[in-house]
Image (cartoon, rainbow, N blue to C red; front, side):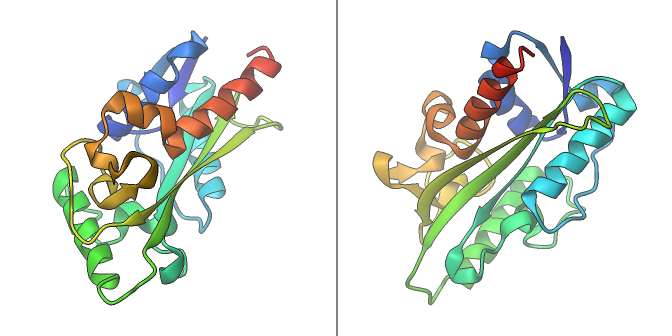
Length: 202
């Protein structure tokens, strides 16, 4: 089976493609079919993920997998949340690394005088067999940690350099791809989604 991966983020595509290897199906990034990025107009991860999956399935005519992920900081009322990739309001920037840096800097600034630095990554993942599928498969993965006071590490992307992983005593950006893909929010969401797909013999 060919399944569209509804993302144009090259680093996310690489990470998810590795996680979906056990599926045995052909995972095709939507960009390979010139499918544009869908808007993320909703206030929940679930609604955005489902919207992106339906968008990719409608244009491609194929089953689709989409996720909406972000970082939530309880002390900031859950921000940046669904706006994680747009936190610093530089959505038009073509430089992903610069955008990540600015998002990180804004979060560090907003936490400058905050004692409670607990945080968690969220990944809500959706699989649909067709655009109007009545039974979307939905899984959620959480990854708990806290926000550092400065960046550490050169791996990963997004908020990884300032996200401290207590069980590994390092930032997410100091983990190897293999280790990250075994404990991250996306790893947990993919594991659960694969179980659901296997139950339905997909």
